[in-house]
Image 1: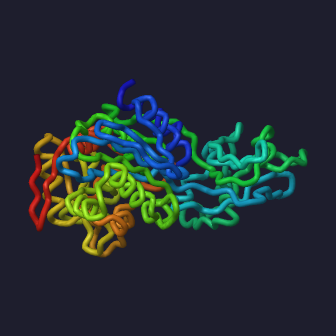
Image 2: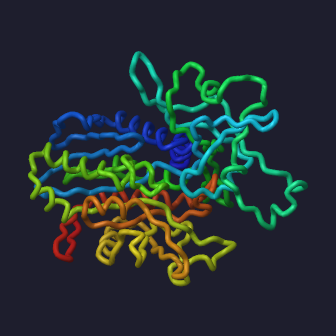
Image 3: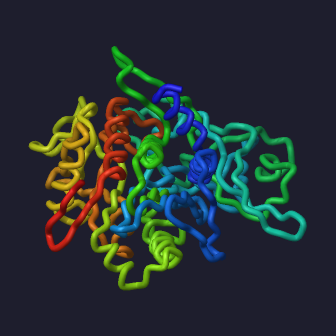
Length: 425
């Protein structure tokens, strides 16, 4: 498949974080990785390829030559804004059945109207006396209908979405006394669930030369795909290379599955323990290790260029974005920015810098949460995109390849860092 086809397949099949994790896991198993269980002791050695999972989060790693024991970590989040089903979701309005939902993350909610939405995620079923979590998707679509302009005359001038009344997906005409969950999963004994209404529209290219690519969940599944590609393509013969995929970034990361939890820290410690490094050697390894937080940046909008920083405009097609923020929303500092500019220069990877306007509030990424638990050098990277958190987002396809190549270059490099000095080989 072409790069576009690979990205399209991944985004279209990764309806939720659970689907994305399953797709990553399938790829790793195909490439000879061994799954480890957190409840067991780990037997790992040089040359090994492994992964461990927690909910919809997954951490993969390879063990190279350990003469210089450090970690090279790239991380991306597998979740995207969506509408999450509450328990007892059925709501009847006259002869129409809708679903009671709440917002997951900060979506551009008006863009979710009049779209083909799937109900997908994870269900917990009872089977043979056990509770089993399964990735699932309802066999039919739902949709959120807009009010006609004839009824809502001010819609084009002002429309604020009320999350309790405006975004309830419609799924049936009244007439059957069957609850939604039973109708969606008739062969399952569903005890509970984490289900979401998500956009199912197909990815597509547009532009004079098909240079743009649009799809649901560009933020941040394009970054996830680039991390996985870079990780699997790199020369990982030295040190411990880690690819981390976290859930719950869109709701702050401070959860069991999030980057602000202990999943990464415990995994890194278990790796060190299995390789027979003590706590002192582990701490020394962290002090010379690098963490790359991969998440997209706001590109310059053609209709609103004034929303971009006046001297750090981030362009679609401009290459990898190195993101910085004086308030600590991103983990990049001068030394790590210089380090990755050098890595990219050595590999011929184009890059640009991103800063918010000084009068605008910044978003953040999982890097800040992760490095509060595992102190090491860090940088925030991504590509420029438009329509972030909309039901359909877009970017320049050439930037994807730059990001994947940049991550490959990162994993293939050796870093020797101490006391404000970094040597890159």
